[in-house]
Length: 337
Ligand code: 13P
Image 1 (tube, protein in one colour):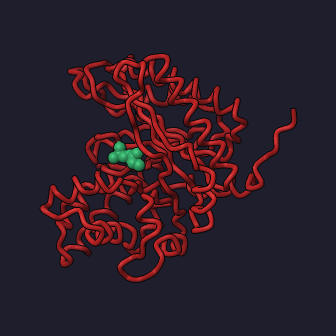
Image 2 (cartoon, rainbow, N blue to C red):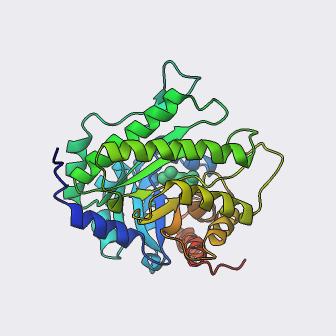
């Protein structure tokens, strides 16, 4: 059997390497309109397109952002709207060497036949949507599915998550987009770090098994894993060194060195915790670029500083740059608090 390689193979490798470049990581700003609405409500603002756009514009326009940020994940509405300043957002990002990407999954729904677990929708029509995103200038995609530790995970939920990610990855590469592969392990639960490690091993083993079956080119993907931590309600907390040790052990056991970048999610860690844990993982050279793709850990202080007031935009952008720079240093293993 001869499998046709993606016509975009060289470009995929180049895109993945650009995103995984030293001292840089991803700004995840692909909150759905509903999630954005919750954040806006927390500062007393209505969930209107204008307010969402004001905030998203603030996030992508700080001068010098490209020194620390190599990619930005956008929500569909963001990629098709115009910036307040009137330039197309994707062009604006590309001009500052920030690769534009887009969330392409359609969210989680209950997985019938499981232990109250979920599965991720979005494969129908994915190829044509991705072809259009490529035309608009996007160069990578993101698909987030969730594996619940307290509710299982059941064999069925893991297989569904892994298969969905693999199909999405193959379709994305066929349309010129580098797939970010994200099976998030939710932090909810009382389980200890060993249990998280065990589940993560299983999830990544299956994900790579199905990605290989789907002829996904590993040099042209990026991963977005959860760090290996104890559950949020576990009374034994872990130090950054412990988190780094378990997480790197997981990566060495399951992730081929051909994968260019591991871009962690922050998953509800505090902003400082997320930076310290990343820094601890970069104390010795790794076979992959080990970096960040944070939403909350990059945005939280920025969002609070903004508070919906135009006069706070500059200070809010400073707050974002501060976290971006801290995580850039952590990617290089040089962060000191
Ligand atoms: P957090 O860093 O807030 O966990 O978000 C990750 C994510 O998947 C958004 O793209």
